[in-house]
Length: 422
Ligand SMILES: *Cc1c(COP(=O)(O)O)cnc(C)c1O
Ligand SMILES: [Zn+2]
Image 1: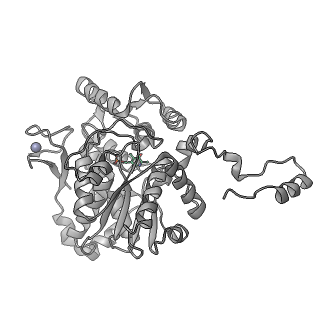
Image 2 (image 1 turned 60 degrees about the vertical axis):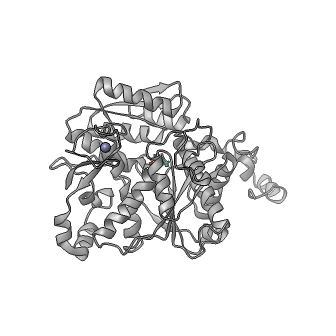
Image 3 (image 1 turned 45 degrees about the vertical axis):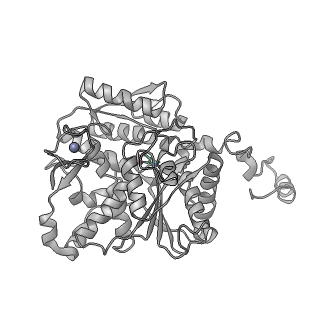
């Protein structure tokens, strides 16, 4: 049950509601809960209660902002596969590697988790209009959930996003506002629009509720591993929210006795062309210096990450790492994941796999560490990353045979041509 909001900087407390920042210190706000009734069940009773729930993120409804009798806005998000990855693991020298495949959510990214929670909060607080600033995946997810809930919807995005992200948002018929600017500029505009119009911006005035949805990635991982925390997680960073919330979810379950002591090392993955957190980590800086993004990983292209300082602190305090991937390495990461494990991810997942590879090959992830890499978005969202110009001169057709419709043509091609991209 939600208790209220607390400032993460100064500890000031507020009743649950649509608030952007702490009035005393402008710090970010976080949801607090009362869980006495869950403690009373004991760990076994609580596990039984969870496993009896639906096969969606709402099986973790006890740990999320819930709103009385209002049912959640649900498209069937969550409880996505946690897959052992022996073939990728063998390539990288990792014996206990798992992939959390969140590319299979209803709108094909993990953003459905945060939006399902945030739109419920918007409805409970009486809003009839929801909105967001987005790097693409949030846009599609919010537009879909707004359609399902029958809410008005305004989506603000950089105008030069990938086609699939623009068309895959517009199809839900929100008011799509394509802004000639970077995400950070779009976000600044969103704050001003929120002030003027008073809408429920899921990642502005509902951000505290929104970000709670990401905790379910931590819960699910623990449940799917047989009620234990991983030794190491590798998580992509845009605003820095999901990486911190995965860990928060694990710590909450530790406190409730659902899993043993959490000693998970948390590592962050960023694109080289937008690496404010990884830069700070590598240089030992205490502060995050904003950057102007230049990367094909558009969904991670936030130059001034709101939760960056918390992500940095978490990586350091858990003994994790932060590493970057160039555009070429991102494309390689997409291909490597697809050809070893049969999972097609977007550029953000390419960043994660490329960074996983670097950390494994340099021994920064131990061979026997139980490692989970988070695949947060679907490859069909960023097909252009595989086009020749982006993919280092390789054409998509490198991997296939093009023939006339005859057996002779097929046999000729077989004997003459390369069967597969190396
Ligand atoms: C938004 C997003 C992220 C990162 O989320 P943050 O919580 O903002 O760090 C990672 N992967 C994908 C595909 C995303 O859309
Ligand atoms: Zn404060």
